[in-house]
Length: 235
Ligand code: C5P
Image (cartoon, rainbow, N blue to C red):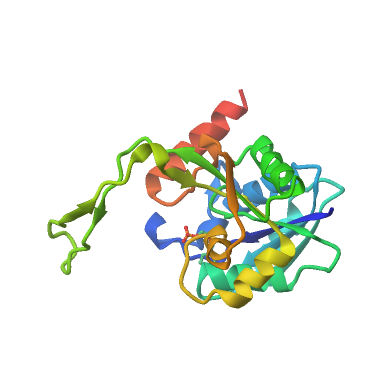
């Protein structure tokens, strides 16, 4: 079985504040995207990385990747992305050569995922799961609300799901390629991760343990945390 990774990196990163597309912002001097590509390429099983670039930034991303060393065994491709994460992933899948039968989808915004997490996801797909997600238990209690018509107004609580049964889902998510392609061809509803498309299709999705360092860099505080993690790793 050959494994490729698709890295959607076409988002603007609006919640991070003004500036370059999120994936191109630096963490300790190196673009977030480069950290993410290296994190996936660190797995000996991953022989191709497909980066989905901002639609007007494919050339820039290509030269960034040329300028930063990857392991000898890893090839990469760059394709322009779309308006939504879902479209961007689809465009990445369309670019995959036929010989890859396992696909990982990994957010460029999770630059610090440890290689052991990547390998655990691949292992579970190799063991027969059609779709695998790394996930962690929640620290916070989660409530479902009736969203306020006016942002900032108090929102009525509708329900409190049992926290012990909830998981916060990360990436890379791993798939049998044919299953993920079928999901992208069939499911048209908006989703926030790839595994939920497979859930709608029917095949079982399984969870393996995620890692704290696979957190998503979304808000300004996450940049502080990411740089602190990198500094600690260098010790
Ligand atoms: O917006 P969110 O944080 O869910 O984005 C997750 C990942 O999807 C990011 O790496 C982002 O660059 C990517 N994305 C994309 N194309 C879009 C929107 C988001 O590749 N149109």
